[in-house]
Length: 84
Image (cartoon, rainbow, N blue to C red):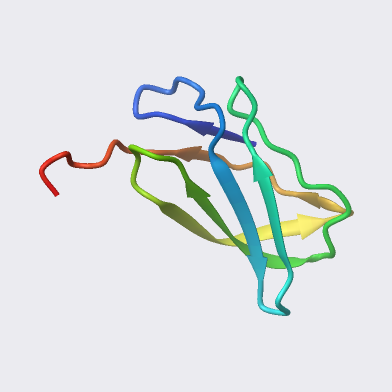
């Protein structure tokens, strides 16, 4: 599970939010390799949201958690348009 830029380089310190329909919200930060980890996650489908200054927010629906772990996901972020 990684957060990368448009060229595939890892992004450190991105906020990763895992939200479920039952109101469960977990937060984590990426390390310097762009990886994050959620442990002991109840089985369900979640929305994964990634936020990092200078990049567009990304939400990934239908991320599955089974056996306490979230399925492997690589989330590419795009730079924000500086003209906005």
